[in-house]
Length: 343
Image 1 (tube, rainbow, N blue to C red):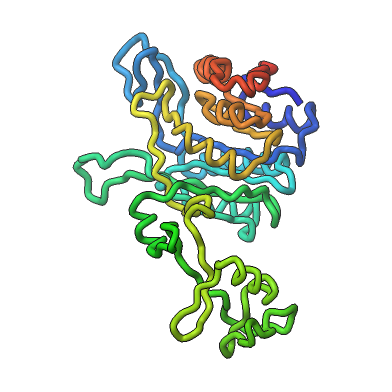
Image 2 (spheres, one colour; image 1 turned 180 degrees about the horizontal axis):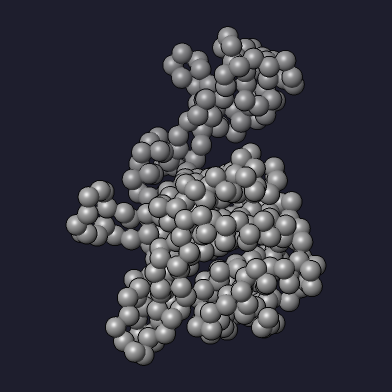
C-alpha cells in the first residue's frame, strides 16, 4: 500500500478507505486528535497561531463549533468507521479535553467494549498558568487508549532511569562496583502445575507461596552469582542496572506541546513517536483522520510505518505536505513518497 494524504471531510475519506482501498481490518494503529467541543475557531498565520484573530491576514485553520450531543454524534459516526478499519491487533488512541473526555469514554466503551479499554493517559500539556478562575489550574488533557481485541500489538515502552532512580532503585553494589537490587523469587499462592513447588537447594517455598520459576533455572542463577542469600538463608534474585532497559512508562506523560506551533493545537512529536513505537510494528499502517499539521504522519514516516492522513483544511494539508517532505531520516526517505487524493 502507498502512503496516502487525503483532502476530504473525514467521513468521506474513511468510507473511501473501506470501500475503494479495501482497508477494512488492516490498520494497526489509529491516533486522532479531534476537535474538543470548545465552541471556538482556530486561526493560522505564517508567524503565529491563536484562537482569537485580530488580523485580516489570518486564515481559518478549522472550526470547532459542535458541542454537547451534536459533538458526540459527530464523533460516534467516525469511531464506528475507525473500528471497522482496525486490524484485530489494532489500537486506537483518542486525544481529548478533560471537559468532554468522560462522555467520550462512555461512547468508546459502547463501540469498542469496556473489556478493550486499556488506559486513560494523563498528558501534561503546558506549564501552570495564572488564570483567575474558581477552580484548580488546568495543565493536562487526556488520551483514551482502546484496542480492538484481546491481543493488541505491544512493544513495551521504557524511559531512562534518572540519577535519583539509580540511587533509589539500585541501592546495592557488588565487589566489582556494579549497581543492583534484589527481588523475591517466590510469589503468593500455591500451584500444582510444573515444578514451582519442587525443592530448590533442598528448600521448599514458604507456606502458601510458590517459586516464580523452575528450580532448575534458579540453580543456574545461583551458579552465575545471581542469587543473594540473606543471613537467614532466604534467596533473592539480583537485578543489575545494566541489564534493565529502563523504567516502565506509567500513565502520566509530561510531553508538552510546542511553545510556537506551526499549526493550531499542534502536538508534541515525542508523544506521537512513543505511541507509534509502542502500538505498531515496522510496516504497520498508521492512520490519523484529523491529521492537522501532520505530526502523526511524520512520526510514522521516521519509524518506518506506512501512513494515511486525512484532513479537510487546505492549511492542514499544506503544512502536512511540508512536514512529510522535510524528512531528515535518510534511512526511510522512501517513506516520504505518498499518493495525494482530493475527494
